[in-house]
Length: 130
Image (cartoon, rainbow, N blue to C red; front, side, top):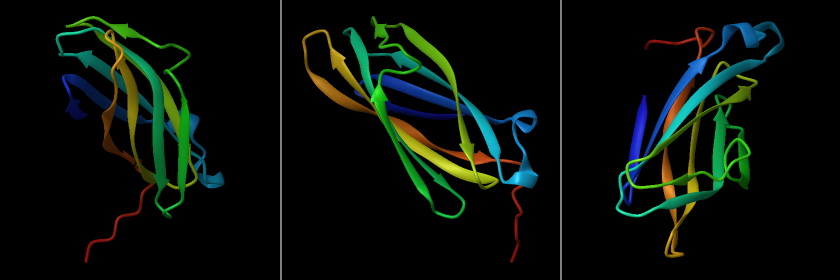
């Protein structure tokens, strides 16, 4: 589990490798990740945008930009949380993801909320000990 707090918005991510969705022999590895966004601030916020940077074990990076998350732009009152699960495929048995959400307050001010960097690890990742 990985967490970060930006201006009272806490983002927690829990990744999980999905063996049954992966095909290591063909260089296809798939992870699910569950995100909880918790509003610890004193005002309502609306999640408007997402930005992900996904990097595989070979250093290949993919950027993903879009509106909302899973087709929604959730509004969170103080103390409310929103949770969703999504997925990420890679061509390598490990990688890393990091990003940000663009949120807007009820008063109209906007800011970016950090999504903490989290590792995508699989049992197919070969580890070398020096």
